[in-house]
Image (cartoon, rainbow, N blue to C red; front, side, top):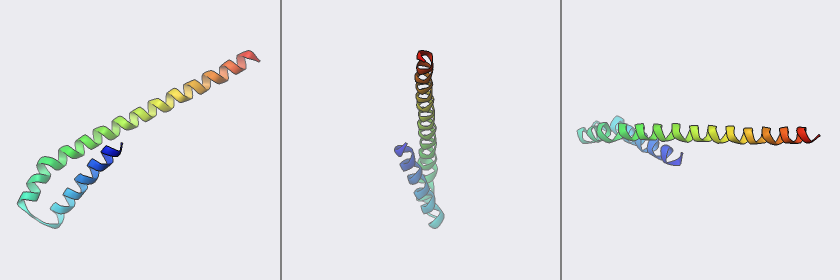
Length: 74
């Protein structure tokens, strides 16, 4: 997740450079490097969120199984 945030930050910095200075070289670098960086950051972020959601679901399933075991022994 940290890598996704860092890549998004690099993308935003590149966009800020293009916004402040209208330089053809900066614009070309932004178009070729910035957008793929943002795409990779977005994919990594979605992957991290899905992993977190599945881990949380597994944790809740285990907690419910423990409660069911306790209720069965009573």
